[in-house]
Length: 186
Image (cartoon, rainbow, N blue to C red; front, side, top):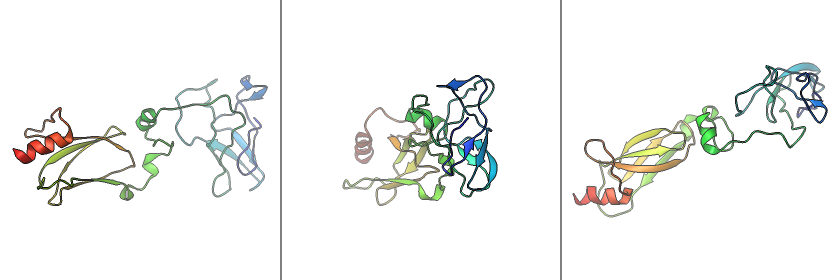
């Protein structure tokens, strides 16, 4: 209760008997009096968060939004700095978020791709590979006549590893370059 939004709104509800230095903690769904649009909005969750509740209510976090008549929706501001949630990048990826906490499904799919190119002499056309991405996905590709392989991605997840796929669909334990040399030499 008393937390502020970026439009100057004030939270008017808190979690009963749950305080931080005397101020009731606010929660998802709490009312916000917004002077900018002269309406009463409510807090909506935005961004990654750990599951859980306090007294049956989900705590509001910095970066959540206030749904009122303002456009764009105001962002909830932090009122303190010693209670917070933190995440490792693999935890964010498992929840569908990028390393900066951005929701990957909100990103346009057509803008994300990754391409690998081999600059060595000789053709690797037809050589199959598997790319392993930070979001846990694995995609297969085939090198073209220009020794390039291209992956269109639904998000900006980084490529962590590339394996060359040998006959039978198995990957070897060797490096990509070692596999390419084996495939070229025979």
